[in-house]
Image (cartoon, rainbow, N blue to C red):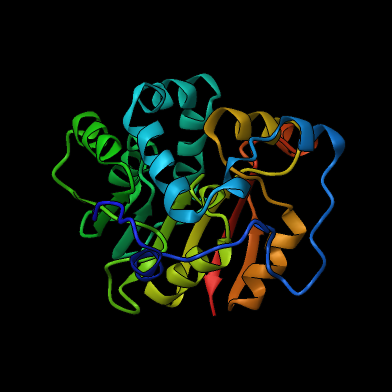
Length: 258
């Protein structure tokens, strides 16, 4: 990962320049958040440019908070319930031969992929945090995944490389989701599938935002953005019926590249 540069010119080469407005660019007026969400959500992503925010995220996940991520996944039941998505084939990995795991973290989703993907499938995992990549390697203890450090806004892969993508709670770390979604669309094969999980703009999402310094997404606005970029919103997935009733667990959806 290249080190942060000091000039505005070099910043523009390395990543998306951005203004303070970080709402989804879907041709509509920005959605109004509830008062509670405005008070609780972390606003760092709106106050600094992308390069500074990205470096902050890397520092957070490289440090003690990143080490606590796996425990959070277990305590919130996201880890065991996430595996059920694959084991029950709510998101079917059958026949997928080139899989990309975006923002692998401590390997929560990557570990499920090693268990439930076809034996001959290749699995590529990346994270913006070198510390998280090291944690994933130590935790999974499998030679199946290929690991690298990379940035979702500038993926080091050729067009149409993957027929399957998993992206778990990563998009909320982008000020402008369109940039990341376009990159994912680019590296996916036509007809490919993506499992996208991200933080929703509700009570639970607000507290998630405060803890992990991320943004939240409005479900309908994100759906419209995905469709505008050439994704089919194939099915919404819920961890359990209770999650569906209380709209908990964030946004979990299967997307297809048209």
